[in-house]
Image (cartoon, rainbow, N blue to C red; front, side, top):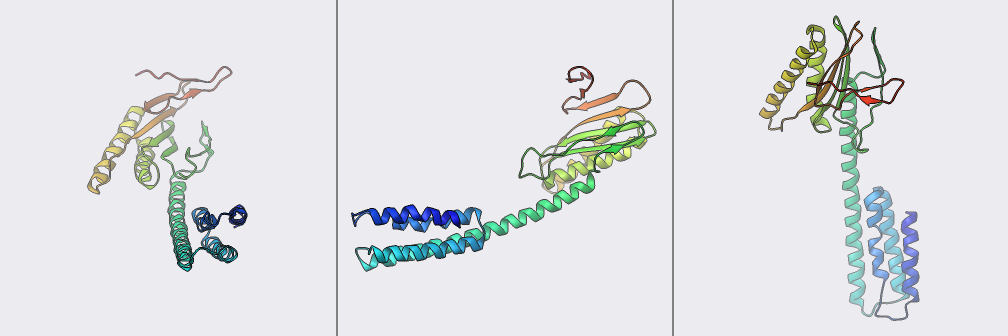
Length: 254
């Protein structure tokens, strides 16, 4: 509301300073409620409309228009645009609330899927931070899981194609398959095969609902009592080794 008042002052001053009666800038006041309608609340927009109508009426009284029909046109246009600004603001606020509720539900669902960090097993401490690249996207397609199995600690880092609720379905399919196969499969390659089949089954299901198929990139690690760590990379960024020297990606070969 303060910005609307501040924007009013130069328009009013310019209107009063112009000597030519044929040049009028006061009608520009009808555009002021558009600013709170775009970023403010419905109450702020309504207050801006009332302020605009009051100032516009006062300016037109101080500097009359050439004819009475001009008064009707200008004031009618101001009222119509003011009502449209209020209605637009109301629609925008309602839309933002709906998106916030949907996003909050998606975030709660994702928190139930992904266990909180750090995760501790008998051999590994897994820690990190989850931060979507897009600030307006609280739910991303990244997933992770840690499983302490009879064959050592298995770790999954994945990225589902897409964002939001649509990505959560594929993420849940991969996480469920990993949690089960990590306890059953003795080798990482067999574990990855199970993950692949889970994505294939998920895509077969979404095809029936008319949704597009999705792919998942993943990095699966296996850590046991051996001195080497096993890894299978399925299109995911390569793992990096942290040591006393420079941090560098680890080439896994074929």
